[in-house]
Image 1 (cartoon, rainbow, N blue to C red):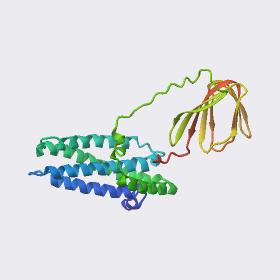
Image 2 (image 1 turned 30 degrees about the horizontal axis):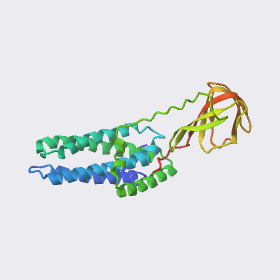
Image 3 (image 1 turned 30 degrees about the vertical axis):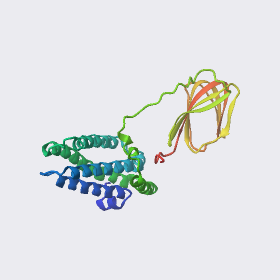
Image 4 (image 1 turned 120 degrees about the vertical axis):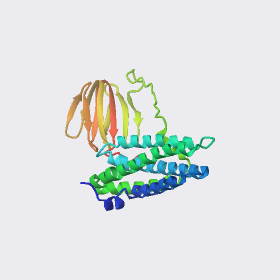
Length: 280
C-alpha cells in the first residue's frame, strides 16, 4: 500500500524530501535568472550551487537509503537515473563555463532538459522510492535509514573534498590479481583474502593432506566451494565428506571445522546478514 504524503514528509526519508524542496527552490531561481538580459555571474553561481546540492543529495541517497531498500527492490535503475542527471547537468555546466558566455537561446534548451529531467526524477522518488521505503521497511530499518541520512547530511555539508561526492560519475575501474591459486602451496595451511568489502568477502583456503581448520564460527553467513581435493566437514551434529564441485552453505554462528583428506583447495565467501550501509 502506498504511503500518504504526510507519512513520507515525516518518515525515514524526511531529510531527502526536505532536500527536494531546496532543489526546487534553486530551480525556480534559475528559471528567473535565464531571462534577457542574462547575468552570467548569477547563472554560473546558481548552476554550481545546484550541482553541489544534487551531489550531496545523491550521495546521501546512495549511501543512506538505497543499500537498505535494495533488500526489497533493486535500486540499480535509480543509480542509472542519477548518472543520467549528472550527464544532463554537465552539458549545462560546460556551456555556462565557456567563453564567451553563451546566448540565452543556447543556454535555455540545455537548462530545460536538465530541469525537466530533474522534476520527473523528484516526482518518481517521492511517489515511488520514498513511498516504498515507508511501506516495506521494518521499524528498525526505518530508524537506521533516518539515522544514517542524518549522519550523511552533516558529513556532506562539512566535506571540503567534493571529489568524494562526485566519485559516482567517474569511470569505474578494475583491479587484476595473479594469485596462482592452484599451484603447490608453500605452507600447509593457507587462508588468504581475494576480495573484501564492508558487506562481503571472498577467500582462498588451502589445506595440505591431514591439516585442519580448527572448530570455529563467524557472525556472517558463509559459503564454501571445494575446487580440488577431499575435505571432511564437521559441525556439532553432522559430518560430511566434501568432494570437488560441492557447495556448502553455513548459517551464522554454526561451529564448524575442516580436515583435508587430500591436498585441497576451497573458495570461501562470507556475507553479512544485511548489507545495510557502506561505512565511511
